[in-house]
Amino acid sequence: MNRLLFCITFLLLALKGAAQPKGYLPIQNLSEFQQKLSKATASLKSLQSSFVQTKHLSLLADKIVSKGQFYYQKADKVRIEYQAPFQYLMVMNSDAIFVRDEHKSTRINTKSSKMMQSVNRIMVDCMTGSVFSNPDFKVRAFSNAGKDLLLLTPLSKDLQRLYASIEVYLDKSDLDVNALHLKEPNGDYTEMVFSGTKHNLALNEALFKTR
Amino acid sequence: MLGFAACSPYEKALISVPLNGREDTRSLDPYLYKPQFKDGEKQLYRCQFDGGFLFKKFHLSGLLFFKEMDNVGEQQRVVFANEMGLTFFDFGWQIKADGSDSFTVYSILPKLNKPAVIKTLRKDIELVLLRDLGEFSLYRKGNIVYYKAPLEKGFAYFLLQTSPAGLKQIDIAGKRRVASIFQFGKSPENAMPDSISIVHTKAHFTINAKRISNGDGE
Image (cartoon, rainbow over all chains, first blue to last red; front, side, top):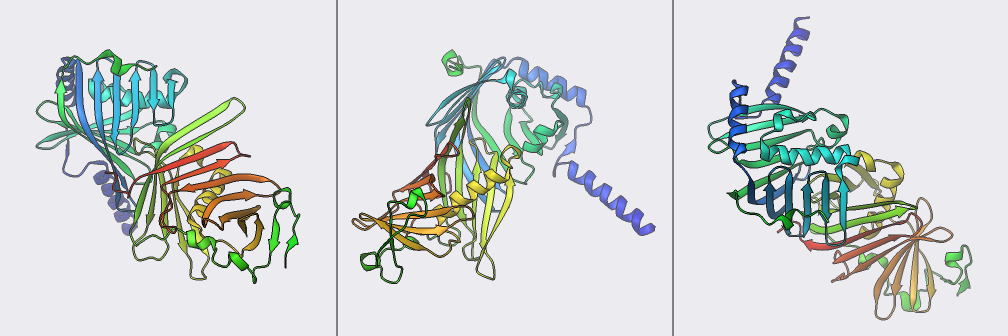
């Protein structure tokens, strides 16, 4: 019996440990943090950033690296443009998503796809700080000396099949998104690291065309 | 000794050739075109899946990653992920102790997780990699030599040109051809090709892959 109790206690402690990202502590005053995040993003009208995306294959210890440009325009326009080693464009504008690869252009109305709506909303939420009100995820906030971390756990079964969790790393000084970690159920994860971020530039509307 | 074989409409125009007297086909062998990987070697392809039946169409694009595992002996992994990193499928092959191939699905997107889809993708990749093929029988038509290998359902035909020597295409056929695999830029002949095109005429989809790097993505 004692052994059983010990096992259960150990398991619970292990699960509790796993739920907290290494090197981070939970943010105690969550409402204060949310206010800080809302304030920081309220003045953000547009954003342009370079990114390096690295796909980590868990069972292979291998990486696939790609690079590109990220654009955000208030309130719900996002452009992700992969430039190397391949060309790929994704534009999210309100309810529409436009995708273009080397062979084909596709326009998707997110109203007809709950999944695409969710994906669209994650990107916009990360920029606008509205991530805590996203109904598709349970959101927890952590912090260390240099960064804040938002840990998003999908609530719907459809999203759970795609992602185990999404980690959003924010710079503590200005609450800019530094990095995104998209973790898959199979242990693979994709890391997007942003650099050279410029705020409130006058971005050309044509960047967000979905036709 | 030559004889006519008319087992199926596909083979109707082909002439059977005995394996022990290949004449000018002696120097031809599909295994000359089997991609040889070094331990740890990687190949990265830009890849598109396009298909449709009646009014339903689909288009998937992403990165197709081939990797030879270190020091394991012909253990290969093939991963297809979309541009944003989401894994569509992750398959693995390894030679078992008895010499046969074992196949593992490490992961696959729920929407693709259907036996027919896995079987088709597995077969296509195995033919490109020339893995685990049975005994060949030989046919010819003009200057093309057909090496026929049995599949679980139907046959694979490796079409080898005698002059200039080269792997023209791989056909998958039962009574009729159901798919063709074309490979371009295999240099040397036992290297992975620069591009691959797989046309499934019966299942109405195509796979096109073009090499972009040796796997580091840069």
